[in-house]
Length: 213
Figure (cartoon, rainbow, N blue to C red):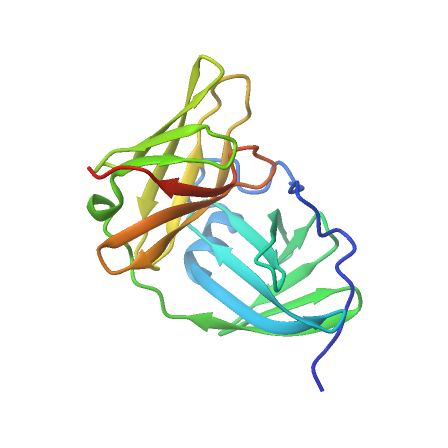
């Protein structure tokens, strides 16, 4: 029998915890934890009779927990490290070994590690647009410039050895710096969209490709 728990915090806006991996000390316990467990972990479960997914992404600079509904609605949370575990603002707690064990609403799920292939940013270099008609221009170097009300917000994408695509939102345009991940939609060299997962940021979401390089 599949475990069932309520996702009462599933909403359009993502919640974030600050101060999680915000220091530059590469020898800190938090940085060592990320280095030891970099990668993506996921588990399927049932939410109110519908299939859903819990996904945990650990980059070299951040931990992001994602709740994904059967309608592909995604809510993301930034993690805080303490006592060899990660805690998130929705109450979830995750511990890492070979797999990840995450507890939420008194139910514990085992998230299996996934094998990922680092994307080629040259294939993704293009112009993109959001559902709100904002524009994003991604260079071959992985720098994404987003036009926002006369200001340019920069999000940098970096392909990591784990296969994850790390996303870093700069503290520009009156917005705070945010760490997250990004995903490419498409098949092989045919990249049709980007999905930015930046907890608490209003530029998170799908960006549809509008032009080539």
